[in-house]
Length: 469
Image (cartoon, one colour):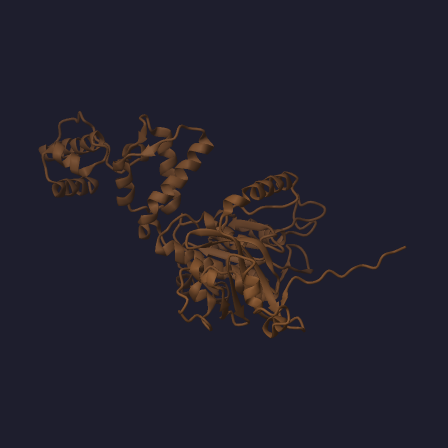
């Protein structure tokens, strides 16, 4: 006997029943709140319509403070309720940080009897994650098993991998989370080494496309003759050596996911027109093919140059620029957020030492001071490289400025120069004395000046003079 298929009920809460109080004699929201550690509800415009007393306590909001009608993002910039409103789907057992405290959150859409999304509600079920450790450990083991069996493909980076506590980095994370809620093109602007690909992967990870593939390609590293085949694929027989079944391009591989185009300014003008078609029509034409193929891909582009200037110079298409520049996000250089350097160093040193299997080494005070004073033209990437060098070069129990390459920019000095004019000989001897003093004091300029018997201001003047020679 064949049993009839049972239709599973959709996971949502009926707003009409809640507001009419049909679910209980007690106020429905209060009933729901009594089952958790706090709850908050919003309407279809994402404005607060109710908040439980426990939730107020959790976010330190006074009981008499008026919140009804306030956009929830003004109160909770990192909230995911807008995503629930947009998708109409719940999110179960998510983690959210509130006032530096991790909480387990479940979010549900509020719908009317016709199934129209009229709002959303968020419940906090746990504020003590330690009790959930066995569950997390079990999930981690299961995820690792699935990855080994290649049943899922994880993203490498998430937004939490953006290390820093500065106002700049916190604003960057907020912008990235908002960008993740949308499915439009994003343009990342920033100097080389600021972490544009990490941010792109973080946006992908936080978006609804996180189950799809993230594909990244650096346009600056791609020969112009290979750009079309690499991006758009090639039909069978398009050129010698192509597989019988043709070749998929990066856009096809990213179908259903995200394509990251780094250094987009380096894309040839002839290919820019084809990329514009992808953005406008969501279709591609492979090399050597006369057939259009539909694709569903989100594009995140990045550049370290000035695209607007290239447009003015005729080196970049204006129409493509405006299609890419829908959601521009600027990544600040490291020199603008130096307060993040100690945290970055601690995180990077731990990773470097674990991966290289080297003894744990800390930075000396003078090394930390040098890191804070340095200008960082290579940004976070340069910081990582210098710390990696420090772990290898350190001979003592800690990393000194010299191990980081602090004195590499000082000119080499021949301590036994051939006789020349008196001025040149004196200058070379002075350079040698400055370098020796800095090495002896571990880069501490005050100590070096004292050792040489000169003021700190004079030391800076002499160093500047030597570097100019």
